[in-house]
Structures are given as structure tokens and as C-alpha cells.
Length: 507
Image (cartoon, rainbow, N blue to C red; front, top):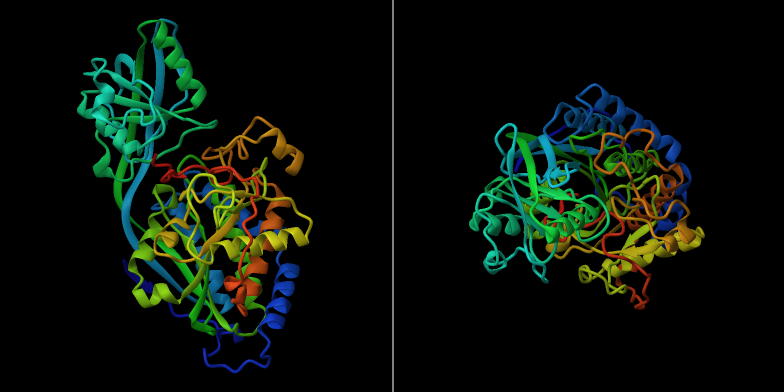
């Protein structure tokens, strides 16, 4: 990873004082409580909204999006960088190369027996059809626990030159389309196994073997039912632009504080190419930025170093956070006491979701590294103190906490939901509308400045502020035992489903 260091031109505030600065108080709990209260009071959604407005203006001037590798992302990163440098942080860019992608065609139509158009999403890093696509028979892969994952799944029919209809689950999308390709399929259509759109990735360019797209569960099941009655012919066109580009994370940290006890928080700054990404994830980026700026105004060095990160290329498969973690030395990894992630914190039909650090809900993935349960408990306690309803959500690996968990760093955070469907029970708890997505504009052009719930935005900014204030001075809660109490969570009820990724789902 190439690192471009930036020298702060502004006179450092006391948060930028020497790591050896003597603190006037020696009571970590009191210092933590005082700073947390101050940051919660001073950090507001109304103030953070100005950052969302800037992100929207940037997208409006840059092809309508802020995707990694685009002018929109570069301008967003420069905006964040400049504000943090002016505030006195030690700020740097960390650059890395990746394959930029942008869909060129996403079309699926039933030609016979009954013509109709079907919405389809190209998988990131898919192979492309010829311009105009292909017309071919659709063939369903038989259902089992690992549909489409093994060669034997394709033995019951002739898939040569045809489009394979495959249900999600059991293995990665990359494996499903690769196995279909080996069976001779000309393309793969993978349909969801839960409600909501399927926006996925094959992981990398090398994995793509045949044109592959994702469908909703409803559309996939309807196609399967049609096939049970007879032959179905489809017109299928999936094309994607791919190009190697350079992008960069923005990393900012206090100049003071004990580096051996580094408190880290992050949010991804990039959008998808389909829209400006104001909720996903302008909201997390703006909330994090606002709290960082308020911390700088306190004019005092924290006991522990506080590091903020704005990741790039999350939408391509967590590439920015993966590059960052991969470049850490063993000592640097050990110095990070915790990582908190904030991704989609203002969904317009959202709920308040807290990552299930100890797997007390018994859903999906297992517990996070030791200390993750305490991070969840601390966030829950803060929300309980505000009388705010919440529930757990699974560590699916779908957002930028994933690389930190993989190397054993305690992790947690919040979100308010993506393409998952809100249940009647959640309406009772959070309000909103049952039967539609937490964010109906997820990965769409309508994820704009109007796609924000200011109440949830404010609540989650308070969560960020309280965490920064608390852990900047006191990490002792990370060693206090946590009772195993379920919080009625659901897999991916927040950010959604990576059973791998694309916010990038990979399986």
C-alpha cells in the first residue's frame, strides 16, 4: 500500500499535543464521562447534515455518484481531509490500486412463453456478454442446501449455451457461476434467499467466468415456477466496465494519546455508481466527521490515541479496510484496542441495530473477538439510558469491521438497515412501514439528500460521540464480563448480507 503523508499546516490544538503530555486529572472514569457528555451535547445531526449537503453537491457535479476511483470520491476525500487537517489532526491519505467497475447493461427479459422484463443487478467483477446480450433457454439448478455449488448439481440437465437459474446460499456467488461455467452455461442468474434486492460481487476480476446477475427472491421463484410448467427462453445482457485505478483512504488521528491504546472508528466514504450514496454511506462518514471535529474543539489531548478512518472501495468488497489491515505490523495490530464501524446510520425506514458481539442472539455468524461483547453492551447501555429501542444484528462480514475481526481486534458499531425488509414487530418497536426495505433507495439513484431519517441520524451520532468520549480516556469496560442475554436480532438486519460482501455480498 502506497502511503502519502500529509503535514498539518494548522497549529495543532491540545488534542495534538505530545503523547507524553501530563493530564490534570487521574480519574479515567470521570474524564471519560465528562468528555462523553460534552461530545454528545455538541455533536448533532443538524450540524452533520451540512456534510451530507456537501457530499450531495459533489455527486451532482461528478456524474451523480461518489464511487471509489471517481472524481466524486476524490472530492469527498479531499473535503474530509481538509477539514480534519484544519482542526489539527495528524491526517494522511493511504492509497491503493483496485479495479474500478461500472455497470453498462443490466437487462433480463422473458421472451417466451409470456414476455416480460425483469429487474437484474450485475454482479461486481462479472464477465460481460456481447453488446445486445444473448437469447437462450433458462434452466433451473435443482434445489438443495448448496444449490449450484457442486458439479453434480448440473448433472440432471444440459446447461451448454444456456442460462443457469441458481438460488443463493451454500457457497459464494463466484463458486456458483464458476461451477455453472464448467457445466457449459453461457450465463448465471442468482436469486436471493431472503427478501430484497441482490447486489453482489464475485470478489475479483479473476473469479468472473460467465456473465452473472442477481434477482430478488420473488422474481427467482416466479421464474422457477414458470420452468416447472415448461420451457422458458430469456434475453440476457450483462455488461460491466472494468479498469485499474487508484483510490485512497483518509486516516486521521489525535497527535496526543497513548498509541499503545489506540481507539479506532471508521466509515466508508465511497458510494456505488448508481447514486450519490447519501445514506450509504454519507451518513456514517458525516457522523464520524462531525464528532471528530467536535473532539478537536475540546482543546485537550485524550489519554488514549483516537484514530478515525474514512474507507474507500468498500462497495467493491471492503478493499480499503482490507488494504489498511493487511499493511499493519503485528505491533500495530496489537495497539488497536477496538474498532467501531458506522455504515448507513440514517435509513428512512430503518431500525436501531447494534452488532451482536457475543452471538447472544444465536443467529448467523459467531461472536466477535474478545471485547466485542463489551462494545455491544456499552452501546446498548447508552441507548437504554436514552430510552431508545434497539436490537442486535449479526456480524455478517458485510462492512468494514470484517477485516478487523479477522485479525482478532474487538469490533462493534451500529447501522439502521439496508435492503432487508422491516417486520411488523420492528414497526411496533421502531415505527415505519412493514413489508418494505429499511432503505428502499439502497444502491439506487434515489439515495440522495432526501433519503435520510434525521432522528436515527442524530441517535447514531450520539452513539459515536459517547464512544469517542468514553474510550478516549477509559478502556476498562472492555474487560468487564457481559451476561449472555439475547436481543432478538436477525442476520443482516442492519447492513445486510455478506455471507461474504457487496454491500458487496459474495454468497
